[in-house]
Amino acid sequence: MKKQFLRERECIHRDEDAPGEFFNGVFYVQALGRLKIDAAMSVANKVSPFFWVDAPHIMVWLCNDCAAELHLDDAPLSFVKSSRRQA
Ligand SMILES: [Zn+2]
Image 1 (tube, rainbow, N blue to C red):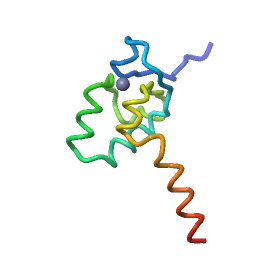
Image 2: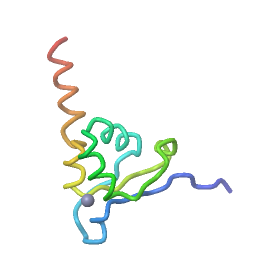
Image 3: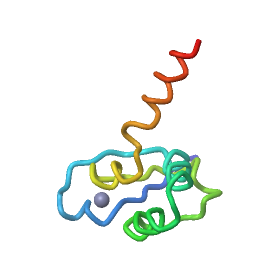
Image 4: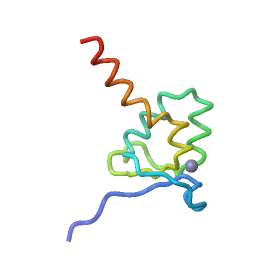
């Protein structure tokens, strides 16, 4: 039997039944990197930590508020839109 390497992390609001969803660990790390250090620390303090090299194997559950703090909702879409406009 193969071992299951996919691991899950979550923000502290999951215990409060807040609405949210899973994000790829790589997106989470990239989103953190786009924030200012203060904002990044604020979000990182709410999510169980993991080694960034493990990010490809990790799914991070974020409530809607934490996802918004990371701009995970709008960043990819607006990027696609603006790159299409230039073409
Ligand atoms: Zn949260």
